[in-house]
Image (cartoon, rainbow, N blue to C red; front, top):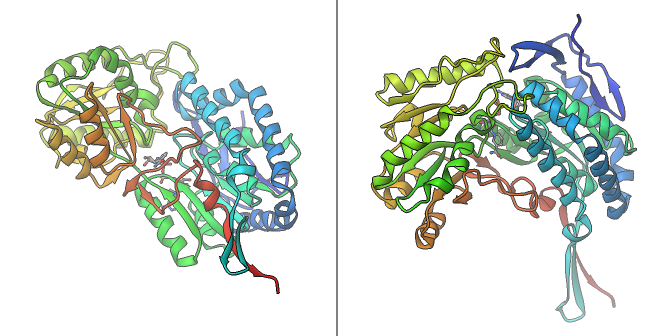
Length: 484
Ligand code: NAD
């Protein structure tokens, strides 16, 4: 049977790409192809940008509260299709259905938060900055913005940007990950029902050619990117060269510290979720586990026992607690890191290389894996693996943990389990990463707080969502007035 071929959404219509190149979309739990995605061209991007550009003048003069009302309608439409979006997501990405539901909820929360535009887009003013002279700053939309998304959160990540951009009066072009393009295609079908003016939002599928066309297009004012650090750095540099606003969120190598005073019973469920939730394919996932002092043996024994109980399978099965990796290529990459860990002398205490997943013999699975006796200089302690592989680095003191965290080039998130407020405060105060969990294994800011890291985990200054994003999508025009 022929596979469905996805289309772009441009100027309110579903259109075929100009391309002759297509990629396969997979169900990673089953190891089956489920669709074909066009690798769009620069001409496709230009078509979308021209539509967005044409829509901008009317959209920017539409009152913010009216623009927000489209988002209220969108929220209702997403709620009505909630379960269906989650199922499309699980089928192409692999994460378990409850994780997909959580992701769709986070997506909708961004739509909700963006409706606060009439408060959060306000400028400010001051009378009498000099005798009889007043000053006012207005926040104005800028034009066409674009976002380029990663594969690990196909529903949520584009919505860290899209609703804020359009509610501020800009128009938008989205390029989802070519590995998981079906989720946004379904989301845009739902969006099509709410009657947004044509051209306000556009969807272009593809890979590098689409990205490069976005980066070079003279009519795109700014780019929001989320993905790996090498790509983030490239996006940032290229946007600098072409004079665009840019926020580029990159990869991670997150340390989770466990102090001797931590309550292990309470910590264990969230620790397991930190490392194995979404099969370790979260930018907030724990990667390094850092027990401090004499908690190490107890912790590793209990953690490994809990890891063995993870149940792998098709994420659409409600009993599954961990899905596959996204692709065969990514599974190979993760297996390569496990081999490297062994070669460099780390002690493999739980081996996920040959998992038994009877219902899904062709899926791209790697089982929960734990390395003990990892040292900070080993490859598996430095590079992002993005899979269910835990590197345990035993530390002697809080000081050593802080040094460990701050010596990774990445600085996305860091967590600590402790019952001491003083220890927690010291940790939060001194570590470089900008998303901190205290007795929390995934330090995920909600839509109304900024999402993004520091160091090599984030290029640019304004992060995803939060209040600050209204600044990314607007320019402040200052008027200084005197009436004679
Ligand atoms: P990726 O960098 O491979 O791809 C991201 C996007 O960039 C995709 O749309 C892809 O088509 C495009 N792309 C990839 N290589 C490119 C190139 N050479 N030139 C131009 N475009 C290119 O990332 P991924 O594998 O899809 O996603 C996983 C990564 O994203 C991980 O590193 C993860 O940590 C990171 N991530 C970070 C955050 C965060 O908030 N910091 C959130 C989610 C994911």
